[in-house]
Length: 418
Image (cartoon, rainbow, N blue to C red; front, top):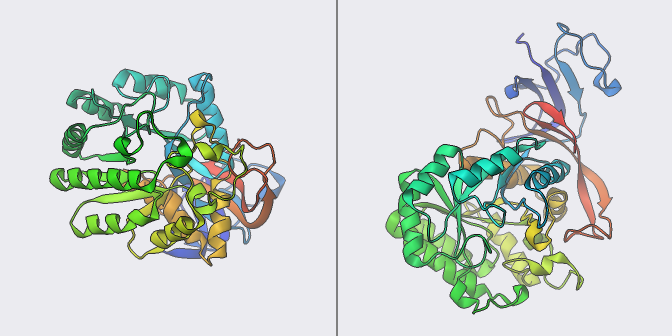
């Protein structure tokens, strides 16, 4: 038998094709094999429940979760990391700890708002150094604005960014100004040449006024107009593009029409848009600062319908964590999403597809799947546990009773703790 480091077993392992009983064997940080349940014999040492490590040469450490589900770690696309007034290193450590509590094993950091914004190779290196001690894996998006040139994009990609991000309004404010139509097309041409992906905050600045209307007044037509601009440019250029965040359910038909026209376009939403209608939060909730805003209960229901449409281009869900506007969502997003999903008789496989497999595949990362050859990013998730979010929690779920709790997390095969 191969020399595995760790075996995590459960009667409910969420694999790409469904949920099955399995032993997940880990070696040197990667999943070496997904084997039939209890096919690996426990080593003749005290069980995992005692917390005792195996002696050298006595087989793998076996972690038996019983019937507690084992999920792939979430890949959180477009996470805002830098908190105002905080050292960048502290922000990455704080975000990493929050990510672990929420079952996120890879944070894909947004280039802005941040100091410095990730718009050149030098600023990317600043962020890479700051993130070096994070308890989770960190990937980076490169920022695109009107002054970004081909060499900037090439240098960012050579430095390690996994994709690029731009805004058509104030989605990257104050560090990334809105792109004009010519700037958008120019960026798409260069990013397509690099065989990369452009993520766009698609609210149109012209529809928001000058200065922009308050967060709660931002109309769905701003999202529609911005999406039309993105589709028009992508259709000409042929660039891979992803809209994030997507909130206006009335625009779902535009996504479908773009796909029918051969435009390689996807979209991402956030759990708070799926779980919290605008009528719910109290007057002091940070969710009132969301850009785009929470929309009506009818929109929330229609957004679920768009998400569940077979072959929907709305295929990824990210936390929307953004300390710059006081939105701290990482620790609770998975539980909030599961609370809403189970009411619709959905499965944990849906969660894994939206939060882990979808974003990882979009970025070409060997993560987000419990499958041989992938990073051993694993999450033990108690899908029946209930948690009352503290009233003083800084996020939008304060005071809510959520179902589902992350109990253990492994990042690259090593158990990690917040």
